[in-house]
View 1: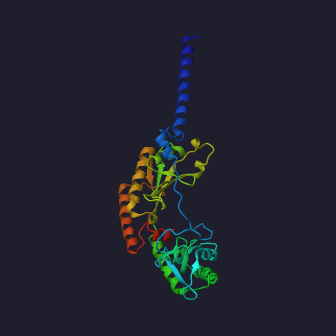
View 2: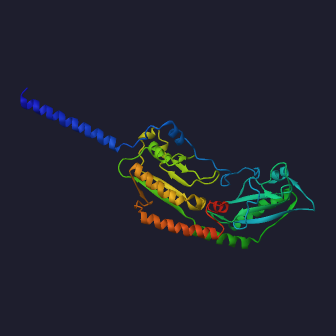
View 3: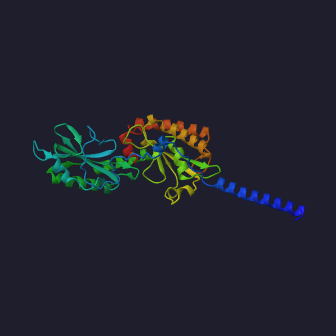
Length: 347
Protein backbone atom coordinates (compact mmCIF):
# COMPACT_ATOMS: atom_id res chain seq x y z
CA UNK A 1 0.00 0.00 0.00
CA UNK A 2 1.43 3.34 -1.01
CA UNK A 3 1.98 6.24 1.37
CA UNK A 4 -0.86 8.07 -0.37
CA UNK A 5 -3.29 5.22 0.25
CA UNK A 6 -2.22 4.95 3.87
CA UNK A 7 -2.69 8.70 4.34
CA UNK A 8 -6.13 8.59 2.76
CA UNK A 9 -7.14 5.66 4.97
CA UNK A 10 -6.00 7.48 8.10
CA UNK A 11 -7.80 10.66 7.04
CA UNK A 12 -10.95 8.70 6.31
CA UNK A 13 -10.79 7.06 9.70
CA UNK A 14 -10.44 10.42 11.41
CA UNK A 15 -13.41 11.82 9.54
CA UNK A 16 -15.52 8.76 10.39
CA UNK A 17 -14.57 8.99 14.04
CA UNK A 18 -15.45 12.69 14.05
CA UNK A 19 -18.87 11.97 12.50
CA UNK A 20 -19.59 9.25 15.08
CA UNK A 21 -18.45 11.47 17.94
CA UNK A 22 -20.55 14.39 16.68
CA UNK A 23 -23.57 12.14 16.33
CA UNK A 24 -23.14 10.85 19.89
CA UNK A 25 -22.64 14.38 21.21
CA UNK A 26 -25.76 15.62 19.39
CA UNK A 27 -27.76 12.70 20.72
CA UNK A 28 -26.69 13.43 24.28
CA UNK A 29 -27.26 17.15 23.81
CA UNK A 30 -30.82 16.65 22.60
CA UNK A 31 -31.72 13.90 25.08
CA UNK A 32 -33.91 14.94 28.04
CA UNK A 33 -31.88 15.99 31.06
CA UNK A 34 -31.95 13.36 33.78
CA UNK A 35 -32.09 13.62 37.54
CA UNK A 36 -28.80 13.19 39.37
CA UNK A 37 -28.37 10.54 42.10
CA UNK A 38 -29.60 11.93 45.40
CA UNK A 39 -28.30 11.50 48.92
CA UNK A 40 -30.66 9.50 51.13
CA UNK A 41 -32.06 12.60 52.84
CA UNK A 42 -32.78 14.34 49.54
CA UNK A 43 -34.40 11.20 48.15
CA UNK A 44 -36.76 11.09 51.11
CA UNK A 45 -37.73 14.69 50.38
CA UNK A 46 -38.67 13.89 46.79
CA UNK A 47 -40.92 11.04 47.94
CA UNK A 48 -43.16 13.25 50.10
CA UNK A 49 -46.72 13.48 48.88
CA UNK A 50 -49.28 16.22 48.63
CA UNK A 51 -51.37 16.40 51.81
CA UNK A 52 -54.91 15.20 51.25
CA UNK A 53 -57.49 17.87 52.00
CA UNK A 54 -60.48 17.25 54.22
CA UNK A 55 -64.04 16.76 52.98
CA UNK A 56 -64.58 17.95 49.44
CA UNK A 57 -68.20 19.08 49.02
CA UNK A 58 -67.61 19.16 45.26
CA UNK A 59 -67.51 15.37 45.15
CA UNK A 60 -69.04 14.14 48.40
CA UNK A 61 -72.31 12.28 47.91
CA UNK A 62 -72.51 10.64 51.34
CA UNK A 63 -74.79 11.62 54.22
CA UNK A 64 -73.36 14.36 56.45
CA UNK A 65 -72.28 12.26 59.44
CA UNK A 66 -68.97 13.95 60.18
CA UNK A 67 -68.26 15.20 63.71
CA UNK A 68 -68.08 18.97 64.26
CA UNK A 69 -64.81 20.59 63.37
CA UNK A 70 -65.56 24.18 64.47
CA UNK A 71 -67.02 25.80 67.56
CA UNK A 72 -69.15 28.27 65.60
CA UNK A 73 -71.41 28.02 62.60
CA UNK A 74 -69.64 27.43 59.31
CA UNK A 75 -72.51 29.21 57.58
CA UNK A 76 -72.29 32.94 57.02
CA UNK A 77 -74.98 35.21 55.60
CA UNK A 78 -72.25 36.96 53.60
CA UNK A 79 -72.13 34.07 51.13
CA UNK A 80 -74.95 31.73 52.26
CA UNK A 81 -78.74 31.69 52.11
CA UNK A 82 -79.76 30.48 55.57
CA UNK A 83 -83.12 29.00 56.57
CA UNK A 84 -84.03 28.49 60.23
CA UNK A 85 -85.63 25.19 61.24
CA UNK A 86 -87.67 25.42 64.46
CA UNK A 87 -88.77 22.26 66.26
CA UNK A 88 -92.51 21.92 66.69
CA UNK A 89 -93.56 22.29 70.32
CA UNK A 90 -91.82 23.71 73.42
CA UNK A 91 -88.76 22.00 74.92
CA UNK A 92 -88.44 19.73 71.92
CA UNK A 93 -85.13 18.02 71.26
CA UNK A 94 -83.77 15.85 68.46
CA UNK A 95 -81.01 13.30 68.87
CA UNK A 96 -77.97 13.36 66.67
CA UNK A 97 -78.89 9.91 65.38
CA UNK A 98 -82.37 11.08 64.31
CA UNK A 99 -80.95 14.18 62.63
CA UNK A 100 -78.39 12.14 60.70
CA UNK A 101 -81.06 9.70 59.54
CA UNK A 102 -83.11 12.62 58.18
CA UNK A 103 -80.21 14.20 56.27
CA UNK A 104 -80.39 14.38 52.48
CA UNK A 105 -78.08 12.01 50.66
CA UNK A 106 -75.99 14.74 49.04
CA UNK A 107 -74.51 18.03 50.15
CA UNK A 108 -75.35 19.98 47.02
CA UNK A 109 -78.25 21.90 45.54
CA UNK A 110 -77.41 21.98 41.86
CA UNK A 111 -73.81 23.16 41.73
CA UNK A 112 -73.91 24.87 45.14
CA UNK A 113 -72.82 23.41 48.50
CA UNK A 114 -75.71 22.66 50.84
CA UNK A 115 -75.40 22.06 54.60
CA UNK A 116 -77.46 21.49 57.74
CA UNK A 117 -76.30 22.37 61.25
CA UNK A 118 -77.83 21.68 64.64
CA UNK A 119 -77.70 23.72 67.85
CA UNK A 120 -75.98 21.52 70.43
CA UNK A 121 -77.80 21.99 73.73
CA UNK A 122 -74.78 20.96 75.80
CA UNK A 123 -72.05 23.02 74.15
CA UNK A 124 -74.46 25.71 72.93
CA UNK A 125 -72.76 25.84 69.57
CA UNK A 126 -73.78 25.19 65.96
CA UNK A 127 -72.31 22.03 64.50
CA UNK A 128 -72.82 19.30 61.95
CA UNK A 129 -75.13 16.80 63.75
CA UNK A 130 -73.20 14.01 65.42
CA UNK A 131 -74.26 10.83 67.29
CA UNK A 132 -74.74 11.12 71.03
CA UNK A 133 -75.69 14.81 71.03
CA UNK A 134 -79.04 16.53 71.55
CA UNK A 135 -80.20 19.46 69.41
CA UNK A 136 -82.73 22.18 70.12
CA UNK A 137 -82.95 23.60 66.62
CA UNK A 138 -81.43 23.49 63.17
CA UNK A 139 -80.51 25.67 60.24
CA UNK A 140 -79.93 24.88 56.59
CA UNK A 141 -77.78 26.84 54.19
CA UNK A 142 -76.91 26.94 50.52
CA UNK A 143 -73.98 28.87 49.10
CA UNK A 144 -74.98 31.83 46.95
CA UNK A 145 -72.10 31.70 44.47
CA UNK A 146 -68.96 29.84 43.47
CA UNK A 147 -66.93 29.47 40.30
CA UNK A 148 -69.91 27.72 38.71
CA UNK A 149 -71.85 30.99 38.89
CA UNK A 150 -74.61 32.50 40.99
CA UNK A 151 -77.38 30.59 42.78
CA UNK A 152 -80.38 30.46 40.45
CA UNK A 153 -84.08 29.88 40.99
CA UNK A 154 -83.87 26.15 40.22
CA UNK A 155 -81.07 25.64 42.74
CA UNK A 156 -82.94 27.68 45.31
CA UNK A 157 -86.00 25.48 44.80
CA UNK A 158 -83.87 22.37 45.30
CA UNK A 159 -82.56 23.90 48.51
CA UNK A 160 -86.14 24.45 49.70
CA UNK A 161 -87.19 20.89 48.82
CA UNK A 162 -84.25 19.30 50.66
CA UNK A 163 -84.67 21.51 53.70
CA UNK A 164 -88.43 20.86 53.87
CA UNK A 165 -87.90 17.10 53.65
CA UNK A 166 -85.42 17.22 56.53
CA UNK A 167 -87.77 19.37 58.61
CA UNK A 168 -90.72 17.03 57.99
CA UNK A 169 -88.64 14.04 59.12
CA UNK A 170 -87.82 15.62 62.50
CA UNK A 171 -91.20 17.33 63.08
CA UNK A 172 -89.91 20.87 62.51
CA UNK A 173 -90.92 23.96 60.53
CA UNK A 174 -88.48 25.80 58.25
CA UNK A 175 -88.56 29.50 57.50
CA UNK A 176 -87.03 30.58 54.21
CA UNK A 177 -85.82 33.99 53.03
CA UNK A 178 -87.63 35.44 50.02
CA UNK A 179 -86.32 33.74 46.89
CA UNK A 180 -86.10 36.69 44.51
CA UNK A 181 -84.18 38.78 47.04
CA UNK A 182 -81.69 35.99 47.70
CA UNK A 183 -81.18 35.23 44.01
CA UNK A 184 -80.53 38.94 43.37
CA UNK A 185 -78.07 38.99 46.26
CA UNK A 186 -76.38 35.92 44.78
CA UNK A 187 -75.95 37.62 41.42
CA UNK A 188 -74.35 40.66 43.03
CA UNK A 189 -71.93 38.43 44.97
CA UNK A 190 -71.10 36.49 41.82
CA UNK A 191 -70.37 39.71 39.93
CA UNK A 192 -67.98 40.82 42.67
CA UNK A 193 -66.29 37.42 42.78
CA UNK A 194 -65.91 37.25 39.00
CA UNK A 195 -64.29 40.69 38.93
CA UNK A 196 -61.81 39.79 41.69
CA UNK A 197 -60.94 36.18 40.89
CA UNK A 198 -57.24 36.09 40.05
CA UNK A 199 -55.38 32.94 38.99
CA UNK A 200 -51.80 33.55 37.93
CA UNK A 201 -49.68 31.32 35.73
CA UNK A 202 -45.99 31.38 34.83
CA UNK A 203 -44.39 29.04 32.30
CA UNK A 204 -40.76 27.93 32.45
CA UNK A 205 -39.59 26.92 28.96
CA UNK A 206 -36.42 24.99 28.11
CA UNK A 207 -33.82 27.03 26.23
CA UNK A 208 -32.06 24.03 24.66
CA UNK A 209 -32.19 20.47 26.00
CA UNK A 210 -35.56 19.16 27.14
CA UNK A 211 -36.17 17.74 30.63
CA UNK A 212 -37.17 14.33 31.89
CA UNK A 213 -39.91 14.08 34.57
CA UNK A 214 -37.29 13.00 37.11
CA UNK A 215 -35.18 16.06 36.34
CA UNK A 216 -38.15 18.38 36.84
CA UNK A 217 -39.17 16.64 40.07
CA UNK A 218 -35.65 16.75 41.45
CA UNK A 219 -35.23 20.48 40.84
CA UNK A 220 -38.68 21.27 42.23
CA UNK A 221 -38.09 19.13 45.33
CA UNK A 222 -35.03 21.23 46.14
CA UNK A 223 -37.44 24.18 46.43
CA UNK A 224 -39.68 22.21 48.86
CA UNK A 225 -42.27 21.01 46.35
CA UNK A 226 -43.76 17.58 47.02
CA UNK A 227 -45.41 15.10 44.68
CA UNK A 228 -49.08 15.76 43.98
CA UNK A 229 -51.91 13.26 43.92
CA UNK A 230 -52.19 13.66 40.13
CA UNK A 231 -49.38 12.54 37.78
CA UNK A 232 -47.44 15.52 36.50
CA UNK A 233 -48.35 17.68 39.50
CA UNK A 234 -46.26 18.93 42.42
CA UNK A 235 -47.28 21.37 45.15
CA UNK A 236 -45.64 23.77 47.57
CA UNK A 237 -47.53 23.13 50.85
CA UNK A 238 -48.85 25.99 52.97
CA UNK A 239 -47.61 26.69 56.49
CA UNK A 240 -50.79 25.18 57.96
CA UNK A 241 -52.29 21.78 57.23
CA UNK A 242 -55.71 21.35 55.69
CA UNK A 243 -55.58 24.34 53.34
CA UNK A 244 -54.77 24.78 49.66
CA UNK A 245 -51.10 24.63 48.61
CA UNK A 246 -49.29 27.92 48.06
CA UNK A 247 -48.23 26.99 44.52
CA UNK A 248 -48.89 24.21 42.04
CA UNK A 249 -46.28 23.05 39.51
CA UNK A 250 -47.51 20.95 36.60
CA UNK A 251 -46.10 19.29 33.51
CA UNK A 252 -47.26 16.82 30.85
CA UNK A 253 -49.09 14.00 32.66
CA UNK A 254 -48.46 11.66 29.72
CA UNK A 255 -44.72 12.11 30.23
CA UNK A 256 -45.12 11.28 33.91
CA UNK A 257 -47.09 8.11 33.06
CA UNK A 258 -44.78 6.92 30.26
CA UNK A 259 -43.40 3.38 30.45
CA UNK A 260 -39.90 4.86 30.45
CA UNK A 261 -40.21 8.39 31.91
CA UNK A 262 -36.48 8.94 31.48
CA UNK A 263 -37.04 9.09 27.72
CA UNK A 264 -39.97 11.52 27.96
CA UNK A 265 -39.11 14.99 26.71
CA UNK A 266 -40.63 17.94 28.59
CA UNK A 267 -40.03 21.39 27.16
CA UNK A 268 -42.12 23.49 29.54
CA UNK A 269 -43.60 23.41 33.01
CA UNK A 270 -46.29 25.64 34.54
CA UNK A 271 -46.48 27.38 37.91
CA UNK A 272 -49.97 28.28 39.15
CA UNK A 273 -51.19 30.51 41.98
CA UNK A 274 -54.88 30.59 42.93
CA UNK A 275 -54.80 33.97 44.65
CA UNK A 276 -58.04 33.82 46.67
CA UNK A 277 -57.25 30.35 48.02
CA UNK A 278 -53.90 31.29 49.63
CA UNK A 279 -53.38 33.43 52.71
CA UNK A 280 -51.71 36.76 52.00
CA UNK A 281 -49.29 36.08 54.85
CA UNK A 282 -47.75 33.24 52.86
CA UNK A 283 -46.31 35.84 50.43
CA UNK A 284 -47.44 33.59 47.57
CA UNK A 285 -46.61 35.85 44.63
CA UNK A 286 -43.16 36.69 45.94
CA UNK A 287 -42.48 32.98 46.38
CA UNK A 288 -43.90 32.21 42.95
CA UNK A 289 -41.55 34.73 41.41
CA UNK A 290 -38.54 33.36 43.32
CA UNK A 291 -39.39 29.77 42.39
CA UNK A 292 -39.80 30.61 38.70
CA UNK A 293 -36.46 32.42 38.54
CA UNK A 294 -34.69 29.69 40.50
CA UNK A 295 -36.04 26.90 38.30
CA UNK A 296 -35.19 28.80 35.15
CA UNK A 297 -31.62 29.27 36.33
CA UNK A 298 -31.06 25.70 37.52
CA UNK A 299 -32.77 24.08 34.49
CA UNK A 300 -31.54 26.48 31.78
CA UNK A 301 -34.99 27.84 31.03
CA UNK A 302 -36.89 31.07 30.42
CA UNK A 303 -39.82 32.48 32.43
CA UNK A 304 -42.72 33.43 30.15
CA UNK A 305 -46.46 33.96 30.23
CA UNK A 306 -48.93 31.49 28.73
CA UNK A 307 -48.38 33.03 25.29
CA UNK A 308 -44.63 32.56 25.36
CA UNK A 309 -43.85 36.23 26.04
CA UNK A 310 -40.81 36.74 28.26
CA UNK A 311 -41.73 38.00 31.74
CA UNK A 312 -39.40 40.79 32.76
CA UNK A 313 -38.70 42.01 36.30
CA UNK A 314 -40.67 45.16 35.52
CA UNK A 315 -43.72 43.16 34.44
CA UNK A 316 -43.56 41.08 37.62
CA UNK A 317 -43.33 44.26 39.72
CA UNK A 318 -46.54 45.54 38.11
CA UNK A 319 -48.33 42.25 38.81
CA UNK A 320 -47.18 42.34 42.43
CA UNK A 321 -48.51 45.88 42.90
CA UNK A 322 -51.89 45.00 41.38
CA UNK A 323 -52.16 41.98 43.67
CA UNK A 324 -51.74 44.13 46.77
CA UNK A 325 -54.73 46.20 45.64
CA UNK A 326 -56.73 43.01 45.09
CA UNK A 327 -55.85 41.72 48.56
CA UNK A 328 -57.02 45.01 50.11
CA UNK A 329 -60.32 44.87 48.21
CA UNK A 330 -61.04 41.30 49.32
CA UNK A 331 -60.28 42.17 52.94
CA UNK A 332 -62.60 45.18 52.81
CA UNK A 333 -65.39 42.82 51.70
CA UNK A 334 -64.56 40.42 54.60
CA UNK A 335 -63.37 37.88 52.04
CA UNK A 336 -59.64 37.94 52.77
CA UNK A 337 -57.59 35.63 50.56
CA UNK A 338 -57.09 32.27 52.23
CA UNK A 339 -60.00 32.74 54.66
CA UNK A 340 -62.64 30.04 54.92
CA UNK A 341 -65.22 32.25 53.21
CA UNK A 342 -62.88 33.11 50.34
CA UNK A 343 -61.90 29.47 49.85
CA UNK A 344 -65.58 28.53 49.67
CA UNK A 345 -66.58 31.38 47.35
CA UNK A 346 -63.66 30.97 44.95
CA UNK A 347 -64.06 27.20 44.53
